[in-house]
Each structure stands twice: as C-alpha cells, then as structure tokens.
Image 1 (cartoon, rainbow, N blue to C red):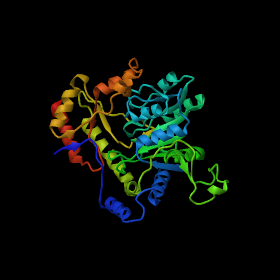
Image 2 (cartoon, one colour):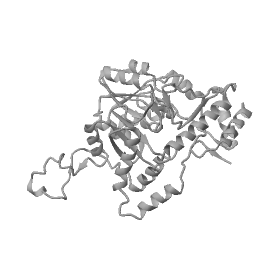
Image 3 (cartoon, rainbow, N blue to C red):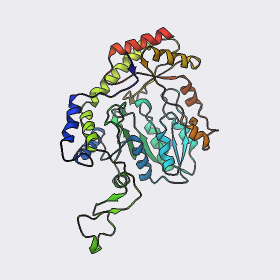
Image 4 (spheres, rainbow, N blue to C red):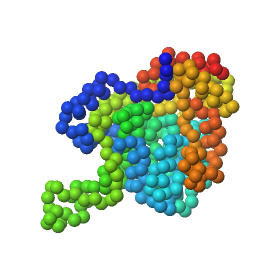
Length: 378
C-alpha cells in the first residue's frame, strides 16, 4: 500500500463527459470552454473568467493585464510554488518576498507594509494550503498605496473568507486545476475578475493577443479588411488556451467540488483529533475568518528529525512531501540577487514542515494508518 500526498478523483461521470467531447465537433476553443468559465465564475460570484492552460499561465496573464513591467516590484510569499514569483519575472518585474505568519503560514500583512517601496506595483497573496489570507488587511494596504491585488488561489477553490467564496474579492484571482488540486482538468488554470477592462486584456493575452471583436479592431474600416475573416493582433500574447476536452472534465468536477471539499475538511478534522497533544507535532492552525479548502495538511516536526521522519513515513507507504522550499532559496533566485534575502518565519517553518496525505478519495482508515505510522516513528 502506498498513500500519495494528493491525487485526482475521477469517476465514470468525468470519463463520460470527456468522451462526449471527443465525439463532438470541438476538441478545443469550443463551447465547453465558455461553459466551464461560467460554471466557475458563478460558483465564486465573479463576473468574468478566462480559462487557460495552467495555473502559471493564469498568473502570467494576470500580471500582464495589471500592467506589471520592467522596473516594477511585486510582493508575494516565499512559501509557495515558484510560479507565484516567476510570473513577475516573466514581465520583467522584481519579486519581493514578505515573510509568513507563524500561525497560518500565510503572508504577513505587516511585513507586506514593510516591504513596499515606490516601485511596488502589486501584491500576490498566496492562499497557502487552501486557507485564505487575511484579505481585509491586504486590501487596506493595497488601497493606501494604490496597488493591484492578484490572489494566487491555486490551492483554495471552495475556500471562504468571512463567509464569501474566494475568487471575486480582489482585482484578480487565479486558480489551478492540476490533478492534486481540489478540482482538476488535468492541467488548467483560470483568472477571475469583476473588472471588464481587465477581462478584455486577459482574453487578449491568453490567445496570442489576437481578436476578432469588432469593438476592439483598429483597422476594420479599410475596405480590404471588411470581411468575416478579419482579425488583428493588438498585443504580444501567448498560446495559453485550454481545450474543450479539459473543460468538459472541469465542468464535471465542479459538480462534485463541494462534496470533495466537505470530505477533505472531515479528514483534516480527523487528523487534528488524532494528532492533538502528540509531542513534537504542530498541527495547522485555522484562522476564525477562514474556511480552508484543505488542499494540503501541513504539520511541523522537530527540524533535527524531519529527514528521519520523512524517510521512515515513505518507507512505510506514506507518500509525504514538503511544501515548499522558500522560493528565494532556489538556485535560480540565489544566482539572481536573492542571496541576502531572509524571511525568518518562512525558513523556520520550512525546516520543520511535512505534508501529510490528503485527497478527495482518501479514507478515514488511511488517515488512521498515517497517524499510527507517524506516532510509531516519534
């Protein structure tokens, strides 16, 4: 038996939805893309959505739509996947890392404030493990300094902040639909916004910067261009389109998302119960304003024993992982000006962190087994 830290949940409804598209006229850029965008937008209460090929693409076009460019600084968390910072680099901007809070492991609004300079253009808070960040404080800072807020919600879909679904709280929010995320399209991502101007830019950037929209065309009046074939490239965009095949799977997955989320929360509560009071284990804290999607269940163990515990868990069929190495510690960042960066809370957390298995098809018996093995090692 091997229990992975995360995996997709696929049933016959998902398979049949994909097969139906495979038998249809459209495999890509067809009606299922638009339907998927509407399903997710309606779920979170956003007005507009643009589905893309993956979560990194979503972050990239969000930065482009925000006008982030060379000379700008973008503040984000170091405890995240590299894409949360790389998206700024793609635009020629500089990522700046604000430390995390010791309790939630999310970006610390106070440190965001400390890191703001005249070059700061945007904040990218990361809803780490699926627990929303303290968005009221972040929005207050953004308003004070006239900054764009792009929420990296790769792990949070189904999560709530003060009773509202994450996805329509800021200028833009990005989601990922990678197989280990709460809902999957295989690979896929999405940007959501309530701002029509941003939406129009997002649509351009995700498909080569090309449009056929009569309201946007600049040279339509030339008689030689007066035909249904006519299109224009208005920006230097990218081929970040998603397929109807993927979106059919996504639509089917969204129908089960609340069920998936409820089960993840039940399993997390069981972990909390079984690990409560266990020496040398810190279980994750949940902020009272937040309802986590529980994409990940993170514990902390003594740093000097982390490797031993990690390896022995894997030897016993428990597919633990560690999320994440602080981004600025990665070799690329070390070679490009980040050697002197230090976020003490992030580094302390990383030295002690272990990701325990948690996924939609996981059973209570598997949770009990994981905890038993962990207790035996300790």
